[in-house]
Length: 431
Ligand SMILES: [Zn+2]
Image 1: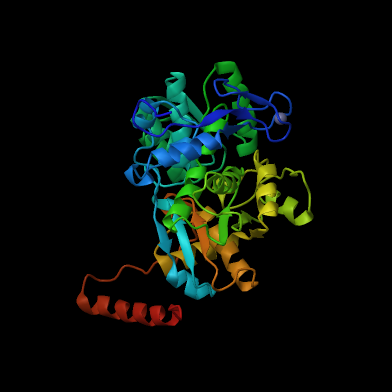
Image 2: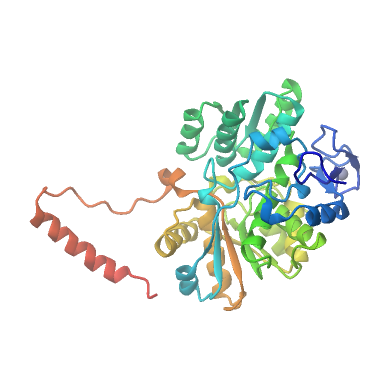
């Protein structure tokens, strides 16, 4: 059937629970399974998606998050026009200098630190959540955030003309809260960690009727993360990488990368079953990695203590899906110390000129460990995902020695330049 609007349409069919098989119509506003409490997922008619992909050539479609509209849950053209048109399609950068340092000959960085509008991968998930909100006709949106969701909600809500309310836990990088306020969001910081704030926001959503991007709209929110898998495979020429390395907190990104890869194969766009999924967590908050390492099926919640505030989720809602993604793809789960995380940030900066936040440092630190342990072949195609921007987190970054001010005089400046040259020569990476 040819859509009347002249564009590819969503092939979503309903809401489903992977844990106990419950399914509900797409029009239902439930986010969590009424039987087991797990987050509901979106189901699709993949045969219809295949047919639509034949009818509507990809070359004619815009390079934004709505490119594979068949595999996203948003049906409203007006919602898609108001949200996400300029999000997605971040660069996939050939990271030859980082690769040389790690002994990897075919390494890429998927750089969502440049995502627009708010410089993190959360622009993808918040876009699909806000589009859903617009379909429902609501004019207010809330979120509970470790930092980046808040800035994404503030930005995307402003452009969509809805009112944002952001609830932050007791610890996050100050620049993220400042950015939210500068963008016009109402910001409430609560005296608890993310898991505690999330628990109370679920109650608040029920009592207030306020839609929360990452609670009440969660099935739609999570689907936005698949767009990263779609883009990586397309940017590699419709080839899946051999390895994907990504930090994980609540588990949304890793689990939906897995789902997105499966869907690409299901609709015939690429062979993706060989791609291995590796997850990275900070040692101070590694409930998913710990479960995988121990061979457990269930996640044991932890109390986070890490510099990677955007990864400080001790009760990951989609953790069980990540366990399945890593195991079924033959990947690994690794945790790294705060020192290793900062070293990862520095290495990415020094080799690729990308300043990432501690979540990205966690990914690079784990990539380094995997490469050093020989778990990734030199010739394998590897994609490391950088989810957030380090310009937002400099307050927590260990300061490098700052030279004292010198006279505004060429001789004084020349002596400093000589010192800089000596130090730079000693530190230069052998590439
Ligand atoms: Zn269920």
